[in-house]
Image 1 (tube, rainbow, N blue to C red):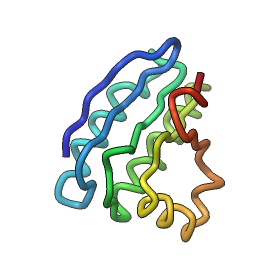
Image 2: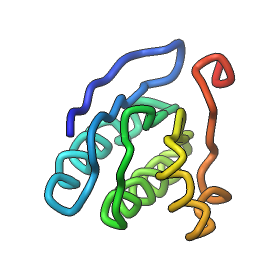
Image 3: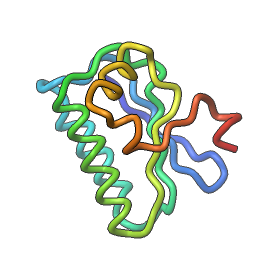
Length: 107
């Protein structure tokens, strides 16, 4: 898994690539927690290049969402691969997260 960051207007975008699972989820948690500390008011996780995510990855996203809410910030997901979106739907987490289909929709 690879993680990069970019700024898009007021949003901090977290670009995640590869598989997110129990073996590397700590890297995702560190990345999310480093930017959900109140310095950024909007964090968007771009999952376009993630074709597999297990429950530990979902848990990291939920933790990021809760941490941003504690700072009155916004946390959302974007460009979700169908396989990952199906997992979120099974857990009804597609209603928990704000989900954007593209950067254009975000702006």
